[in-house]
Image: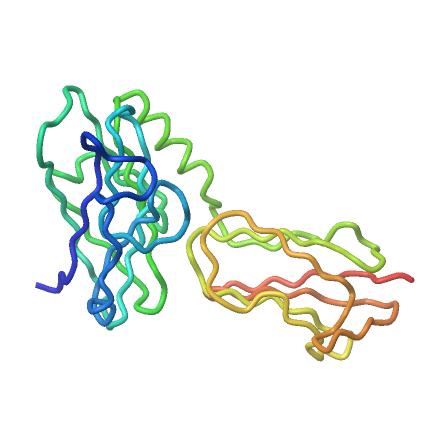
Length: 236
C-alpha cells in the first residue's frame, strides 16, 4: 500500500470548534511521504491530522489537503464511520480539481490523480441531507471553470491598476509585466496559489522599485500550460 497517513474528522462531546486536546497537528516525520491535513475549521492553515469539533452543530465543512513529496500520482482514498452516528447523516466528498461531488465515498472510496509537486484540495461536507446537497452545489459553483486573466482596471491607469485571475485548481502561477520590447520588468506572482478567484495590483514600478514611464505594458499569466496576455496603458 502507498498510504502513509490517515486522518480523523468529526464531532464529539466536550470538543471545541477551535483548537483543543482533540485536534492533532501533522507529525513531522511523515513529511517525506503521503500526508493528509485539515485546516482546523476553516482557518486555512492545513497542519492538522485530526480536526474534531463540538456536537452543538451537525452540519459542517472540512477542508483537506493531500501532499505527497514523493512521486505519487495515483492515490486511493477511503473512509469509515466510527462511533455513534446521528440518524440521517449525509456525507459528500468534493473533489476540487475534478470539480465534482461524490456521495458514495464511504462505500467505494475514490481514486485521484495528483501532481507530485502540488497539493490536492478536497472538501468533505457532513450533515443533514438538504445542507449537504446545498453546500456541495455552492462549493462547486464557486470553483472557477477555467484559468483566466482579466483586462486590467482601470485602463488607462496612473499609477495603480488591478487584474483578476481565476484558477480552477491549486496551481503554480507566474504573472509578470513586460514592456514593449518584451523585457520582463516586474514579477507580480510567482508560486503555487490555491484555486479560486484572485486579484493582484501593479503600482507602475519595476522589480527595483523604479517608476515606469508612460506607455504600453503587457501583463502575462502562465499556469498549467495556460497563457494569456493583456495590454495595458500607463498614462501620466
